[in-house]
Image 1 (spheres, rainbow, N blue to C red):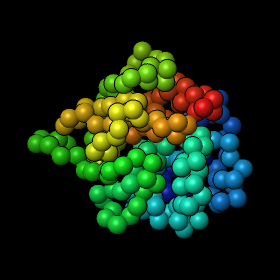
Image 2 (image 1 turned 90 degrees about the horizontal axis):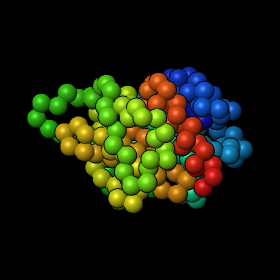
Image 3 (image 1 turned 135 degrees about the vertical axis):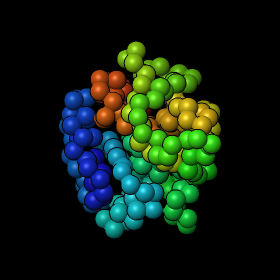
Image 4 (image 1 turned 180 degrees about the vertical axis):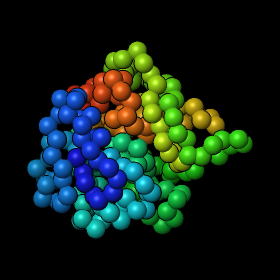
Length: 200
């Protein structure tokens, strides 16, 4: 699990452990080289996360990791960083796995940030990720990706229109919501995701 000095990582760590993973925090490029699977959690802003990763010299190794299709799970801001850029940090470049940018919610009467439990709608063959009947997951965010190519869309959430809330490209997977805060449905989703991306 990548530790770039931002946010509380303990809830993600506990959820990974409940899902059967052996967790080790990585704070430098040497630790990343020893990883079998990388989890990038995130709380805060797009630009601040990029700065934190660069300060610990993790940005380029992490970018190389995802671009070479190594097992990766991004959560919340770790999901948003998979796009080319974010509206809240003009000039800051994301990992660039998906084209386009992450933008602020737009819509009359929408409360921003979105905070609470929302139903997630799996797309395509994403059912293998969602083993539990419960499809409600906990969301806390003000920004979301504008779009993603349909072949990479795992699931979507409705808030002022449907937006991508889960993606998969090879062994790179990400979720906008917080499975670690989503009770048994979230633990099951993490477990499924880890098993699937380990296996390729």
